Image (cartoon, rainbow, N blue to C red; front, side, top):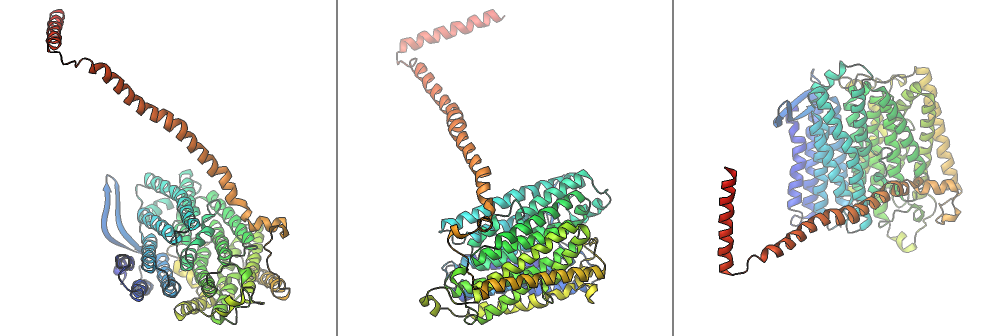
Length: 630
């Protein structure tokens, strides 16, 4: 079964080709069926591979497909690596990807670009599978660039809206900045190890000493790549703007796939990062700063999708915080649980937006829990899960990260716990503003509100179940579990970070849970009992609220410090260097040729006697030259 792994990415690629070519001829029902079926088939094969790997004594298989590049000592095959890490990623990408495809059938049914949308989704899944299956950094990089391209196409899907097209370009450009770091790291890896194959690089790296400057530089450059793809400071501003795409795109990009690529890459390269403690510390600091900033901005947002977008930024920061303290298992565990509850939350938001006829401002919602009972119940489960309350999935993964952070640095732990409290507050704020109180829209709009079709609600129910029970794969020993995930990833990740003793862990859990409950109670008091609604008048906001609402003016700072100087420099080069120097040289050559030709043209007088005279002068000159040179 493992040898059939090449079918997993190939089948979605076939779906892309069929739907892409038949987007204007095939019926929407057939397009939706094909687009979803190819992902489901890949999911079934992925399950088979996962089970086969579990029963196999050898936990790592390299499946060679064909030689691609062979130049001197550089040999790059197209081959796939099937091991515990990639096998779980296959299940996440194809499983949640399938649910999002099914959801899209209902959500995008009335869109005229239905066929094109499904072809893009299939292509995105293909490249994401290529990214996680590649057995070397080059195949990984192809998938890495491919998901960047597809995110551009999907975020800017409604490109006739100029702001949406701008958001797509912003995502593309900011990802290219990170990708340059990744690419330079790959060059450096080949220069250092003579190969880009994981099976050759990691054993060689294992023989090197910790703190090696070359390894540190490689790790730093890889981290730059991860910052771009996984939206860490300073390359995080593209991700909230990516909300311009249809809601299924938000779920696909922000939940289980593209934004987790950076975490996957670092977890895969854990041998290199363990040898660069300074870089690891930097990762922890940037991850923590990103988690805090994302949470602070989410506190005041009024667009339901923007709240979830900044929540994603914050949760990704948690994952990088875990990576930085060496808790690779905890971070990857949070990747899995986050895929469940964040995909659920985005799809629930899409269900609300669908019911509200594309209204996204929570100030115009309220009282929807009776009209959207399935959406409300599933969103409640997702909100509890992301807030970190037991026994829901988010509690176990977040607790594991924070317990390792506690052993690493107490101050970082305190900030991380405070961020968890903020998470619970802004998520329940979103829930209460959307589903509680009285409806704040027009009476005409209220009459049309109805629950989403089954093609949308069934994926919500499945994801809600996973969000509720998904933490079972990583129940710690302190709570009577065996942490199955940790044992499963052991062949790939040997270093698990430092964990506290059971007594300390119980205290940390208690602090986290009590703080989250207080945050929820505060949100309930403010937005349900006091029926508070965020003000629209800018003048009524406090200075801190303005700062948060305007996202700390990061985009404006980038605009002033980076974009405008670059624009001014480009104008200078255009007016001075391009027009005066480059054009001057080109036009000068043309002018000099034209002027010279005017003088030469006078020699062509048409007088035969003059021509004979010139021939005689030429012959005499040649004879004279020959005589003098003897």
